[in-house]
Image 1: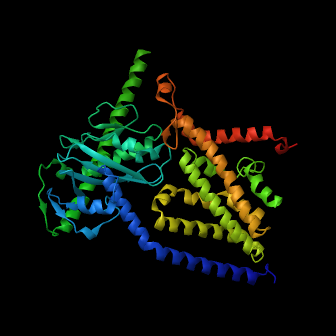
Image 2 (image 1 turned 180 degrees about the horizontal axis):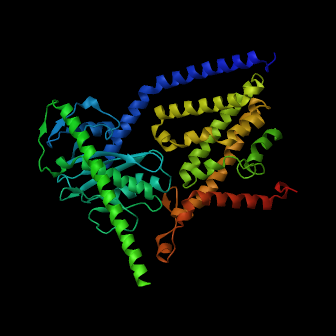
Image 3 (image 1 turned 120 degrees about the horizontal axis):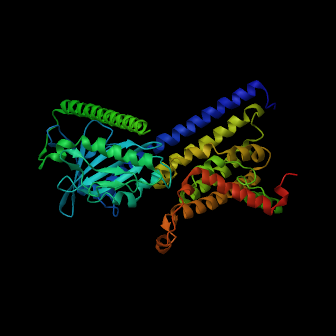
Length: 275
Length: 205
């Protein structure tokens, strides 16, 4: 048979594409369920890892220890049904808070999400009962550079957050600074040397995501409310707070730029005068 | 029999895909900052290359000449996608470790090179051996580069500290440059230099 004729080539390509398409569709659809289960289990593991629990059956531990709440604008919490488990918490406009009992003590876990150098980074920050000191953290990433940015997923980095203060005078002070530039050890964490952009990403992620929980962090006691009303109000409030956060960030950076400019001008003028 | 042995052994040394044919350099730079991802990448490429070689070698007499590269690409891409889907379902931890490297396997020049140069002309058994040989040849270079980079860049191997604390106290410092991609290229260059110096046959006249 002539394998170089046009009709043979077109027929060969068509049949190949059909076979491959069926094969991939079959594999994908038959494995879909197991894959989502795996992703869910992995998310539970990440939340538990922020609570420093890495051993035992993750699904059972999660079931018995962690409760999922949504934060209302007034600082109260609304319980979520157990079957509403998601895999990307910080993406939604609803503010999730996980309440957990570890050794009889109440801990709160907040999901955070941001951008690294090559792709998304995310994490879970667990706070003690006082809602201000860090009990544990977990950080994950999609494709940061191994040995540099990817070090944020290592225990050495997440352990360095232990006992740091999250907010002071209503501002989020928990931050990641350039490696070796820690000035206030009560709230600043050493970044990764050589992974500056990823470290800055972690810093921005913590600042912007934890800011949204301000009303909860500053409230002393939060009674749980069992009501699903006011969901739209909540979303509007969340959107509003995001807009405000963005605005204030922009304002801050503009201010910094102005100050820098003035400084440079001053310096130049001084030098000229000295000459 | 000695022919099969040659097919397997020459890519490990004298006809190494990375050091002699200078293929697959991009991925060699990307994944060699640490030993563990380098080994994972080396093994995945070996397995995919061996299977793709066999598939193409079985199809080699039916493939229309004008679209042979496309057929090879489709076979490789399909295999990689299926493997990554299966890993996600049955070995989630491994698939997380592989994450970005899966895409890099498809674009690895060694795969296209071996499919085009070997599997299109030879039978399935030869092709299988050739795939394993070339994959392992690639893996060896990756492991050497990664071991040097991790040892001198972070003082570790497999994430465990190797260089003792007392050396650091004497003033020794990790070389941050080792973790950057340019250093992988320099180490690779040194390996190629070494191999050419040892084997005069490789030098162009």
